[in-house]
Length: 58
Image (cartoon, rainbow, N blue to C red; front, side):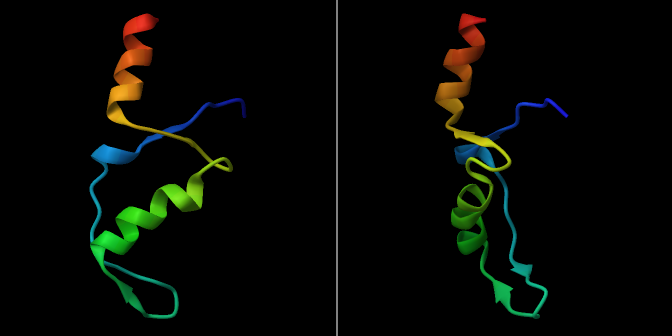
């Protein structure tokens, strides 16, 4: 579709989540694994500082 997607890794809010098998994963696990799961396939991972630097140069 031509979209460029970014995940600002240091400003996301997470909660405990249950997987399809019913196992509940703690917020910290979800917080750490979300960038891993989307990196390079669905989004570019960046810090808030990197995004702000990029936006100020546009």
